[in-house]
Image (cartoon, rainbow, N blue to C red; front, side, top):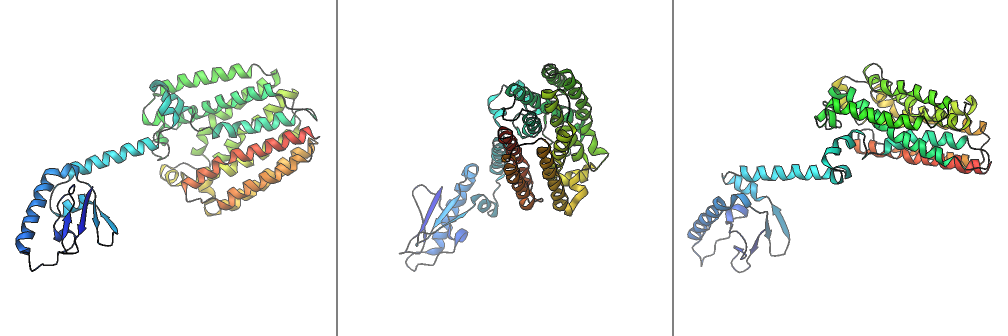
Length: 402
């Protein structure tokens, strides 16, 4: 870093011992001193400056000009040399490469830092660094298992563990299917163009093999349930495999995702009771669909510009400027369905206290989200794990108190 000071006695720039010499015309013209031949001084200063700059262009620092009052002002020495007509291509290229490396480091997740290189692509394919999808898939299962518990009893923790593992595997399988079917679209969308299959880090054959492993492990979990649950769980695969295609044909792929992601609301009850009680599980299932329409519409606003260019559809594009009005309606339907389900299940009063708090959290999302900000849309989307946790806590304490 180069340091300069303005001498009070001579009103000239004086360089420190470690600095480059800089002429008056570059920063400010020196005031002539009658005791000093200013012309010869300026000429020698200029010669020394440009000789130094030609030699040290590759490692130019940023200069700081120190005035008498000790105030600091920075300026870019690269621009200084450009104005002098000296090439700085080498330095600019180095600076650009450093910025690229910095951006890569910022974008790294724990997957890139800690997993073996041959597993990184598969971990990204299953979205292991983004657990929010697993939470959103698991919560309806946990709600249903809790509701199916006997009054005054804790839920079946073994069943909850099985469904947690199943949600993890099925969510990963769904992401793999999505990336296999959407490869051509993902390459055109800024947020998805670096996904493993779209970027070429994994081939489609490798993706298919990985999908086979995920489905095989999921089958192992499904076989531990009763026969009624096995048939019900297997039927959900039709939704899982067809969901990625919906955005090509309808503006309501978020509704189809709701039907897929909330299937656990039916399956959890069936795994405990061996049948379905329509008065409890159907309102619970439909409330989950409406919840998905809220959070995934907010999520879809991240990609609305790219979606219009590519030609795919979403509720974000369908609702446009009326998005908040639409999702407010879905929020009311969601809370209404949860209320009806809890009432029919004869659940205790703590449930309704937690439901009120969850309603406030959902209202906060809708009222405060900035739909033009990708960062804020993603932040509100991720916050839905807390909505799910509130409903789960309400059902748990409500069942214990019933």
